[in-house]
Structures are given as C-alpha cells and as structure tokens.
Amino acid sequence: MNWIYKGKCWKFGDNLGIDGDVMPLRFALERELDPAVLSPYLMAGVDPEFPNKVSPGDIIVAGKRFGQGNPHIQGFLGIVGHGLGLVAESIPRGSFRNAINAGLPFLTGCDGVTGDVETGDDLEINFETGEFVNLSRDITRQFQPLDSQLQAIIEAGGWHANLENRIAKLRSGESAMT
Image (tube, rainbow, N blue to C red):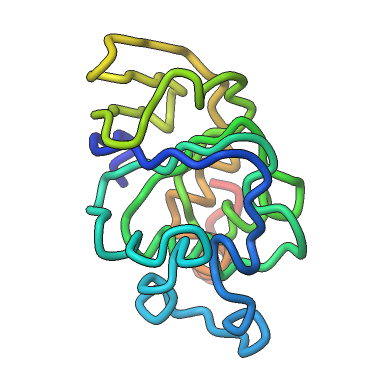
C-alpha cells in the first residue's frame, strides 16, 4: 500500500454529515457496500459535481466533526472508491471506526489544518508518518498518525480483508497477530 498521497486539496468546513453531505442516506438504508456504486455520489450533498472533479491521490481536508451523525460506512467507502485520502480536524468516534473499517488512509486531530489550505492547493501527505505538506503554500506540519495496529487494518484493505487475513493465518498455523 502506498501511504503517501500527492494531489489536489478539496477543502470542506465543519459539521459535514455522513448522511446527506458525504453520501446520500439511501445507500445506508439499502446497505450498499460497493465503492464503485457509491463513489459517483460522494460529497454530492455539498457539491454535486465533486465526483467528476477529483482524481486518485487527491485529499479531502475537512474541519471539525467530519462524518457526524449516524455512523454509516458508505461515505468512507465512497472516498476509498475514488482513491482519495482524508485529513480532518476531528472525526466523531463512530465515523473514525468506519474510516478504518473502510480501509481509508486518514489523519484526524489536525487542529487548524483548514487554515493551511484552499481547494486546489497541491498537497503531499504521508499518512503513515503524519507529515502534511502544502506544496502550493510551502507549509509543512507534523500530525499524529494512527496507531500502527490501526494502520495495519487499513493496509489490509479494511476490517473485512483484515479479518480474512487473520483467519487464513490461523488456519495455516501462524499467529493471527502477525
């Protein structure tokens, strides 16, 4: 897995709801989990053209409480479907878990990060180390990366792939924790 993303910034503010803003609620109600089905609707509640503007490697930079509301995974799967990363000032606990479950590279607890960027800036983010570089504005910040055990789940492709890997290791006699 490549933990370093280099792409355009897509800046969003505070209090984006997982249902409605990040992803239409109907996909949670339908229990849709295919990133290819979800990705054309990503962020449509705030910018209907968003899915057509982004490229793999781009980074969503958001303010406080990104993904607030009922903790549904569909919005995070939509982000993964586009090959985007996420940097947020904060993410509620349920959405934090779902970002990991979806296999999404992200940083949170990035206080003030929205003041360091504008949409269209060129960014380079190392999600493994927490290094954040705004190449357009010559700003470098160091944020706390996720714990290595959480990174391992993301690297595996999310909770389901991680579980399958652990079961396969148990069946082969290896330790499931390696």
